[in-house]
Image 1: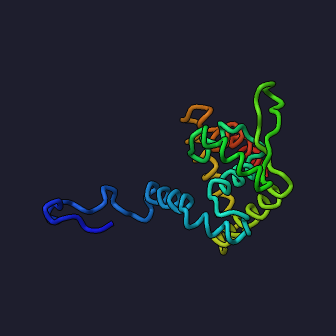
Image 2 (image 1 turned 60 degrees about the vertical axis):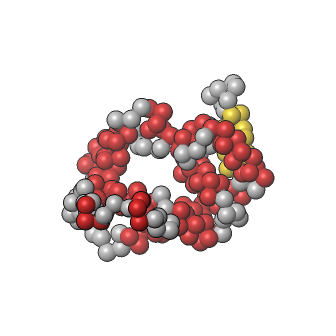
Image 3 (image 1 turned 180 degrees about the vertical axis):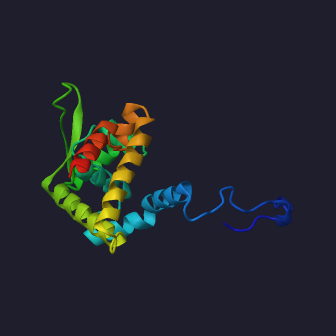
Length: 194
């Protein structure tokens, strides 16, 4: 963005340009924000698309394949919420997915009038490549961690996610794929017995 005319600028010394949040390395909000921005970056998504040989440069198609790979067939309205787009745009995305042979519409077995989007064999192959890529990246990020630290991190992160999901309306929690608190508690109980 080019600098505007000097008359449109406020003197820099008249404005506090420091962050509102003190950037302490152990602050939960600092860490959480960094992870969100990292995971939501278009640059990262494009790098992953290249790494797995995604057949299109359409980030929205990639996001849908990612959701379907992680969660299975989904209603278009839920997918629209999950990838933060409008429902009318989801219809266009579904058409592009079909054209690329990545996903198809199927009848929703739970709703006589509804449809689901499901991965095709080609879409599943890309979904597998995506899951394998992300799993390998996660392994790199925790390389050198003890098994106890890794187990604790998994439990606490799942508990944290379930806590957030539990504060959201059910449809929103579902759209974003939050684990259910009851499932996390069951896993906690099972892990405590081992």
